[in-house]
Length: 445
Ligand SMILES: *[C@@H]1O[C@H](CO)[C@@H](O)[C@H](O)[C@H]1NC(C)=O
Ligand SMILES: *[C@@H]1O[C@H](CO)[C@@H](O)[C@H](O)[C@H]1NC(C)=O
Ligand SMILES: *[C@@H]1O[C@H](CO)[C@@H](O)[C@H](O)[C@H]1NC(C)=O
Ligand SMILES: *[C@@H]1O[C@H](CO)[C@@H](O)[C@H](O)[C@H]1NC(C)=O
Ligand SMILES: *[C@@H]1O[C@H](CO)[C@@H](O)[C@H](O)[C@H]1NC(C)=O
Ligand SMILES: *[C@@H]1O[C@H](CO)[C@@H](O)[C@H](O)[C@H]1NC(C)=O
Ligand SMILES: *[C@@H]1O[C@H](CO)[C@@H](O)[C@H](O)[C@H]1NC(C)=O
Image 1 (cartoon, rainbow, N blue to C red):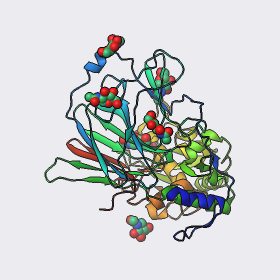
Image 2: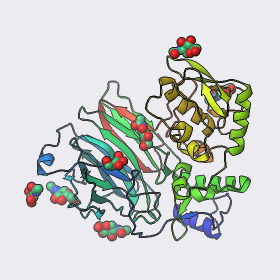
Image 3: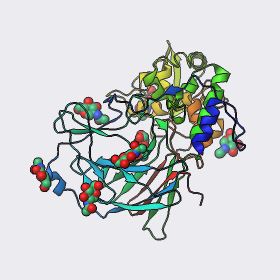
């Protein structure tokens, strides 16, 4: 139903009565190849595992198994789950539907080889749920969900057995044209669970989760994440923005060869495909900010014992008191990732510098630096974010479409005036009962 609707939009056919939005164009999207065969190995899609033997399998730590419940709320057909991670010896492991462990091997291949075990855990039909158990501690864990079969590969990295995961920045990846997403999961040997939903890299299959605990009284944590129709709504919002400012926002929308909408990339991931796409996008704004703060002081509250520090642009470099280094003018690519150029860390950066990076980058991402009150960062709450252009329109739209404000849209979404708001998509407990993941629509209760 969902996909038929999108198809109708993209091809300009008759629209569903329920749908009142605009007709999207048929050009400007990023197209993912069906059944691609080019597997790329990058640090973003490789999980470095250790070598393993039968011995390591037998040594897998005993822990109280973590009950995992998966609720299928997905409208558009059958979904498979895949559970992967590193065991306590650092070896790549998958959990099968019956709770047994699968240790895939590259058999010494330095090129990725497809895992031939059946890793898929088919979900029951819509409205039903599946209960299983994660029997061992798991780090760097992910629970993937896919409409169709995801392809995973192994390779000998020279240091161990690496898992090559599906990539969203490779349009020839075998899984590129499939609709998938994941939640991140860590289950420690001490029995603590951390599960996380993030939109920092992309928005794919819509997931949400709840964690119940054995605490008395029992307290449930919920991350509802995005609306069920968020991929479509995000793409429409990006398309509208592109019509306003002429920027390639529509390129963040990834469609398959039949022009069905698959996922939305963050600008930070899109720049890996098209380096120059937003080149110059922020230049006018950065010029104004740099001019403004060469006359007036900018105060950054480090929200640490170092307190607020005063900053000023001198000779084209923003310098803050008690900070080991200054900040050069960022490029668009630095603002999307918050981890390069002036926002990159080096050894020797002091506490002030380490505190200024996220606060300064968040101020750019949210375009609050020239607003009244913007000369103190962070001081303006979320009602002042993304109110002027240029801004991070992907982050703006993700926040507009969130049901409960949970789930980071950029890496420093946790920067806020009083330091207490929790916008992360994290649930965690040292005393977990059941982790429930909802596929498709978020829970309504
Ligand atoms: C995996 O290990 C290689 C070699 O040590 C390293 O270059 C790479 O960055 C690592 N990848 C990740 C995701 O940590
Ligand atoms: C691991 O165990 C399996 C089945 O018990 C056996 O076939 C295989 O040869 C063993 N591998 C190693 C490396 O010992
Ligand atoms: C559990 O599932 C795995 C993978 O599908 C299979 O190899 C194994 O034989 C099953 N074990 C049992 C006890 O059914
Ligand atoms: C997925 O894999 C299963 C088992 O290997 C197979 O039966 C099924 O046809 C595949 N589904 C698709 C959509 O390729
Ligand atoms: C949640 O996931 C994001 C994206 O992978 C990661 O950067 C972040 O550290 C995670 N947060 C927590 C609290 O685990
Ligand atoms: C910060 O700088 C001021 C002025 O240079 C100095 O008096 C103060 O001791 C410094 N504070 C810290 C924590 O280094
Ligand atoms: C945000 O701040 C404004 C004042 O700048 C205030 O009126 C508003 O209630 C605040 N909103 C939230 C959600 O705290």
